[in-house]
Image 1: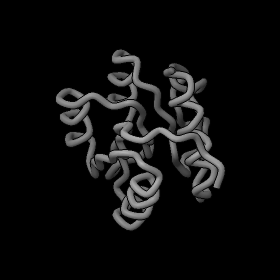
Image 2: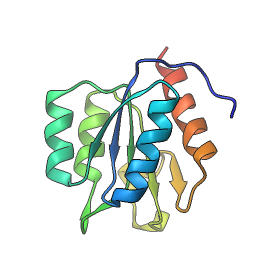
Image 3: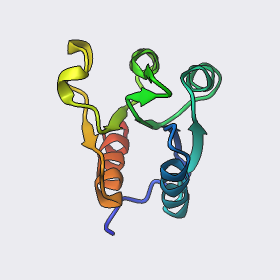
Image 4: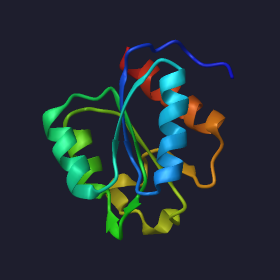
Length: 123
């Protein structure tokens, strides 16, 4: 896997599927990122208010709730994010349709490439 070295970046994963979150967390930690996982909308909102993140990977449907309040707050904080979801793009509100979307099921390479683009844009 060809990826940029971004050792030490804080990455937020908002994902309610525990197995998928663990797999993603392990991969990102192996590539040198610090990872924080939120499994609920409330937990994600609290984390965003109390920690600084360099990037975020957001599942759109978290326990039956839309992740859009988290996305809106990340946007206000100028934190790049990508949606990673099986949700049809038509279900994404117009305010977020221009944000990157990785369709589930996705490959680890797709996630890493998207994360690399977000982090490179911050430099």
